[in-house]
Image: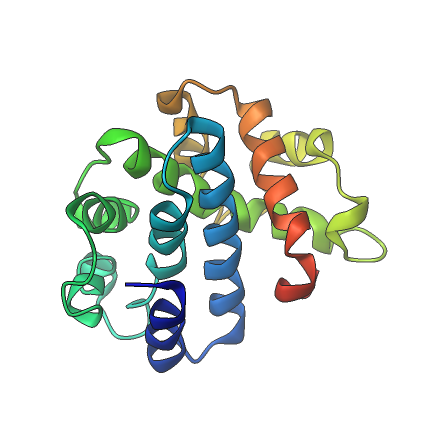
Length: 180
């Protein structure tokens, strides 16, 4: 499966433009993490792009499990497992570097977006990793960004600070594509 095929699946199944932007942001973060760990950027990026491709058609506890059917089993085992485990409601625990990366990156994108939206210009360009880290500590801020999931970046052997820096830089690189 290539990125164009993955985008077709996303566009066919996701109508909410904000959700699509979230998926693009997660793709960018996953690609950056793959680079950091010397992994396959395309495979990791596709997992990030497709991770919520079933969000509008699956029950919450099944979200992530339907994606392989949407791709007609065009995903490798590791990617399918990472997508299934990114959603805590499935009860499937992350396994391996890609699984933990997607599990932690998914809510990080939401925290970064929320952190940008409280800035006067509402743009990523002015946002710093230190500001995101400060917002991370504010439990009432962006409540939907699960802090425990984000902190699971420790399973990757990176600090929270480094994880946020990687995620923010990746999202800044595609800011125009996600409207920030």
